[in-house]
Image (tube, rainbow, N blue to C red; front, side):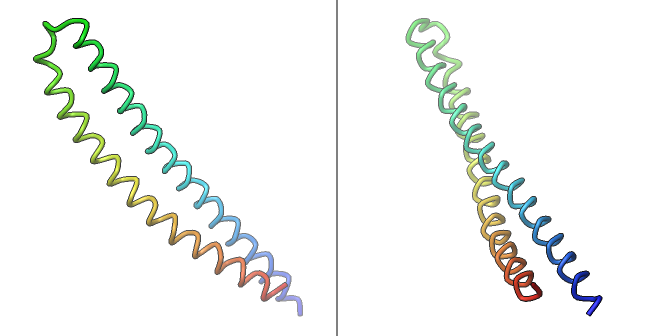
Length: 103
């Protein structure tokens, strides 16, 4: 029976590792959401600048195009991370079940 404590310890370690990775992925997702929000705020801010200074209106089009492209990349990255989060949640659940089986 000396192998059972080692199995329990190994499965606890696996569970904690999966939880750590899940936390990292969730942090990355929050970062992407924050970046999208900041990009929206900056776009609105730039639009207000143009209202106050029409002589720079010609530059707004390029800025908006770049902002839209950046937002698209951020949203694609967010979608990919959310997919990884779902998979990692499944792995956390499986590791938890496995640990409980040995305990």
